[in-house]
Length: 316
Image (tube, rainbow, N blue to C red; front, side):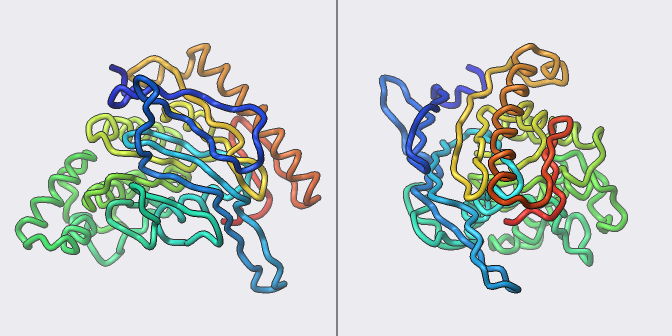
């Protein structure tokens, strides 16, 4: 069974003409039975108030989606479409203004070690060593000092940082810092790993190496991974399903199953299906960028080499 067919599930792409924000069903089990999703958003609305003008900015406009246990899902969309807002709702950092965000059938009411986040800026404690950073969630889990030390070595070894346990963040490269962040996230013992553009600050070679590292961990651990990214190549290479967000206020425009040869290696990027899917995603995103420009007449957004850029910082 391929990794994308987790526990015998068959993902399908469902799109077409539906009401804005209507539930998007993306998974069917055997004999037509639908399993309980790990995450489920039901008509979620979320707005933010500009502290200067007092104006309200609607980030999500009735978003509905489902993510099944064991999936690797990427979320892409134009800047300001609410991708990070969605991730923070899933993590429990934010709450919906209306609608519901469910995890294992219960409303998310705050952060939990079951839903850990890997951030773009690493988020490491500069005064702690690599091992000390990884030990932090183990201490919160009530492990003894000796068990914490053993756990830190275990998780750092999983990301190939053996021998770097006593190094401080300023002594590590960007890629190594992110490996520590990944090890710390896994030390929380999560069922879901939520990643907010975790490779954005890295050079291309390091980025590609960490992409492969994350896929190796996903394949071996069987956990759910959700990736927010602006890079189409990254989304296609890593994902088994891609969720495309609409222009703000964000809803799910479409959900696309990624059917590529397994295991995923660098060679898959030359596969005709990879190229075709990238062209399709570019077209879909360009449509949303044009809608955003027409609606706001704001800063220019452009699509360049599969990366969505914006002239000002993206709203959450």
